[in-house]
Image (cartoon, rainbow, N blue to C red):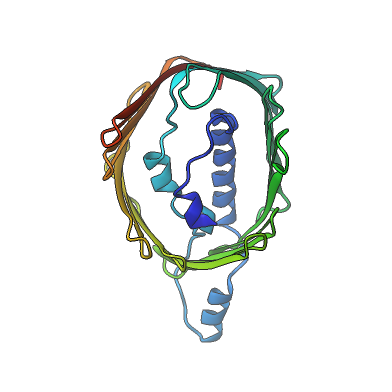
Length: 328
C-alpha cells in the first residue's frame, strides 16, 4: 500500500543495483512526460465538457504509489555500513551485468551479488542473485504509451518465502489509475486525478486476504515550479504530510511529518540534497535523534566514491560505510 511503503526501508542486501533503479526511474519519468501529451481524457474532464465548462490544461499527476517520491528520494538516503564495492559492465547498448560485494556490515554477513539488467524503450528487466539462493526480479513492460505493467518477484531457499506482485498502471492525460495483485491475497486499486494545474486528489483501497486486513486512504498533492506538497490520510491511523522546496537548481529541501492517530506516535524528518560539480550530498535528521548522510562523488567518468553515515543519539548507535562503484 502506498502509505506503508513510504515508511518502510528495504531489507539490507535485497535491493537491486542502485544504478539499475535510477535508470528504470528515468525511463518511467520519460514515460510520464510522453503520457502528458496523450488525448485520453478522464471522467472528470468529460464531465466538465458535458456541463459546457471550459478548463485549462491539466497535467498527469503521476501514480498514487509515487505520491511522496520527491520527499522520499531526499529523506530516505541509501544508508549502508562497512565496505561496498560494485562493478557494472555494459555487454551491449541494452544489456548490463553487475557484481557487488559487501564486507564489514554490522547488519548482514559478507555477501556477493550478481545482477543482470536489460533496458529498452518497451521492456525493462532487472534481477539479482546471491550465493544463498535469494533471487529478486523486476520487469516493466509498456503495452502502450499509456499502459504499463510492473511485475516484482522474490524467492529464497527458506520455506514459504516466495512472493510477488503485479501492477497495472494506466496514465491518461490528467489522471493515473493503478491496479495491484499479489501473493497472500493482496489486492489494491488507486486513482489520482488532477483537478487544477497545480492540485491533484485521489485515493486507494487495499485488501490482504491472508490476514483479512483492509484499508482505504485519501491523498492530495500540490505542485508548482518550485514546491511539492502532499498529504495522505489512512483509515488505520497514519497521516503523512510532506513538503519539498527547490531553493536553487542545486539545492533542494524536504520535510515530512508522520503521525499515527491510533498510537499517537509522531515523527518529524527534515533533509536536503545539494548538487556540487562532481558530487551529490544528501542528509537528514529526525525528531528521534537520528542523523544520516550520503555522499556520492564522481572521481572519473565511470568511477564513483560513496560515503555513508548514520548516528542515532537516543540509542547511542552509529554506522559508517564507504564504497567504490565502477560503471554507469
